[in-house]
Length: 427
View (spheres, one colour):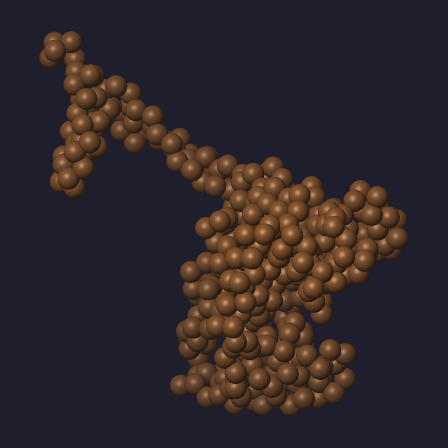
């Protein structure tokens, strides 16, 4: 039995049909007018008046000189963590070469894509760490050309910390361009960019919709919506810590869901009170308060089993477990973008560079996919090679299946091999 002490009053924070129509119109304009359309949108939407979008080597070196050493060391640490984890993931991906039957060899290879377009949003919070998560992992995968895009902060271009992070992570070219026009430029290969095989990165509803409509022109990582966090907690953890972590994710945006599932009514009631207390002094309360008011939920369940069942229904982007039996949840939970186990492990660690990737599925997409990882930049492609004897053995089967489908030309390609490779004493 589930008891909601607080339930979300909202389901979607934007007018989806209006966004779809606006993005469709922009993409059609960009397809028809190319660089001129990109320039117009950059001027009107981002106040970018220059005809040059690529960040120069001089600007990159200038930013390197001006940024504090502490920041650069922090980026180095986070990048190392993320890339070391990506390398470990890559090492699990073995090439395959197997002889399924005598003379029938087949296998697969993992081949990096040639061009990856990596987008890091600006907005209220320039997500500097996103450049590490996308470009840094693409570099580990061996992507040939990595393009970084981010909205201009001012007339100098990309937010300095984002520019530095992109460069440190291995982006070969970095462009000051944001929103729908950035995704389109990467997909179509405009304003000096090579066309991307894959575009990666989160953004606002317009960015997500642009990725959806561009899928097929190129690949995409996933359709990321507002940040979500779900906490499973019990009496073993302080209510103040649960409240802190819920609000820590609520500050992402006024439409960011934050949910609590607990087996303890006492904890649920204390968390509700604690959130109101913490909101009074939270530096980002203007955003977090709206997110909690409209999208926050607190639900009491009767057992660990019910908590797992409900959490899998939510299929949240971030799932945090703070209980007296964390191992049970680690073993039994199935639907989440990334799992944070134990009270010592806050979601912010994953967001900013503990090692795992923060580009994760939202909107219940965790039911069928995980987040960005090194394998996303690799194509797993199969191959086969048959000896004449093996070809002759399989030819009749393939011929008969082809004939059953009415595909007689297919059947002939097998039949001619059956005849060609007949033993001398049969010819």
